[in-house]
Length: 424
Image 1: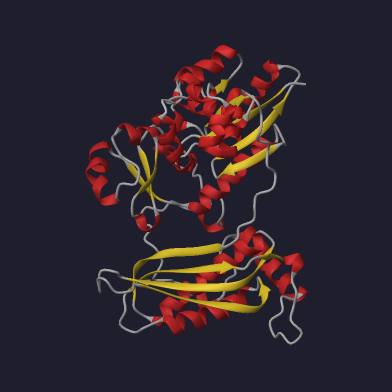
Image 2: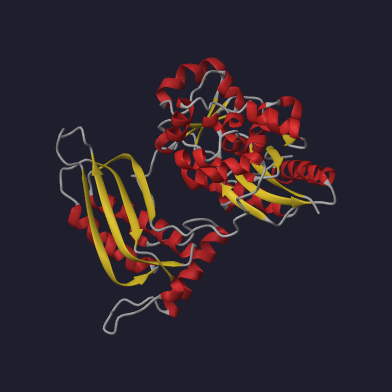
């Protein structure tokens, strides 16, 4: 039976998530701001047409916001993450052989009796995701993952394709490669593209004409694998297991400067809580915790403005009470009265699988089955009823240091008290 790879990409994902629950945003320019409402990190097509650039500071787009009636939203990662999960689960109802590539992208292997059935499954994914989640997607179908990525970009940019493109013939394949610049190829970075252009290789079509020996000398084995994928020979399979992280970082800039040690302890405790949740989510334990405080670097130009402290744990753990206890001590030791703190982060390193823990003979810190069971219960309750349903007292309640989110929409799908209500 023939099979193809599909890349499913959510269109303007963050803006689309906001539109699902606020119909007034349909056909209206929408921009999403970064943490602390600092700069633009996502735009709808309408906002792009209004000339709003990525990464531009929020205050610089205010004139365009007023002129074009642009809707502004603070980044709502709880909503985006949950909507991403729903999209991925919907795709799996059509094809279970799927790889989550990013929050808004997934690769899938689609099989069928013939290529016509494969293409119809691509359309089924598009229709079902829109119907079940409200998120519009584009689908690219091809013999390899790299070609599927290029086909998806064409499906998204060419309105005549209506969001689905399948490379069905040698002619389609050739035309796509000839219209693709080398720096737009998935897996070809900026440095490689500069090298290739120096040798007169400007398009994907130019690239696949080069001898394998030349490609390997200029782009190594990974580059050669990309070229083989462009030629239509599959070298990359669907990856079902994501690589575990070697370190987990939880960090935020403060919404307002912090001068008080108690507020600083609250922030560090909250970041540790979040990092520990991620740690348990990948079934790992950490052997080292690092706390870093960042002051205003412009207050004393030329002087150090980042201060960190690392602590080795006696035995690896994922117990949030143990980790917070260590992080609090680090924060107190690093704190210096009179300084203006603008940011803090907590880093967990020395990660090991929770099945490989080795305790010391005289160790007082032990991630016992009882503690593990307690942490499992904590995570289960927070997953069911919303984040911070249960949390440590040291992470505070009001959290005056929290980042600015002036334009934050409700967490419609993850908090009972913010669920969408419809009036008759």
